[in-house]
Image (tube, rainbow, N blue to C red):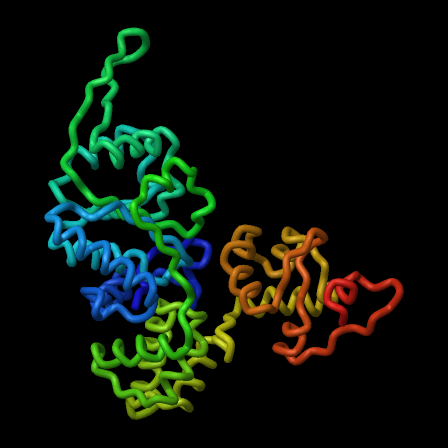
Length: 356
């Protein structure tokens, strides 16, 4: 159960993607599991990580460096905190974008305690000079600090105490092989099944002292996009609705009514997702259409459409990326209750792509 990593600011206003304000983040932190036994889902990752940590404790050594990859909200930050708790070690949290110079990284590494866990979020966004310094730190627990400039510059070796680096990334393909190979354990976080999300929701409801029935939990889980962070956010919004509009008990009908207010439909699509699909279907006949044109049609930035809306629509089989542009699938027409245009000799090519 895992709703932790920050996401791009482009989605900050979305209920199904927002990182939330400080109060929301505090609630999310309170709901995080504290050890592997409480962690729901990611069975293979949990089993493998448990072996890594137990073996390290038995040897009396620090754990191997760990790389966690996967979409936002699946539990990378939560697992990093669990690693520190299981190893009874302190944890320091930073991010790739915050480390723009090798000196920034050297300052962090030189202040680590023995056995400390360093969590580096969005590690693929770290600057190249810092990245190259990290190679030596991970392998030899040593960094070379450059003093002076030009021909008179001197490299002073600085020994580091053994530590565990936990790197997290949403785009593992951007990590250079030399960095990726220095991690002793790598894991990819998968999206959650609805049954797992129901367990997440029931646990969170218990911690929040909420009454929710099985049907209500299933309704929220089905709209949570396979992501525990979103499941917990939707649960809190449904809680608000139930307390104001009903008797505080979350049933299937209450969950449906609440999520209708917040414009989250039966498949988890929100206003932006539906706006992209409606523009693609109603304005461009299902495509193909270029990304920039589609972004203008929905009044959003190109990056917002590409990085915030598209991944989920593609995963749901509602949109496809083709060399000619974005194309709606037959399932998109069905989901919005629209009838696709009839095939014609001068059509836009969508029928050729999907056989419609």
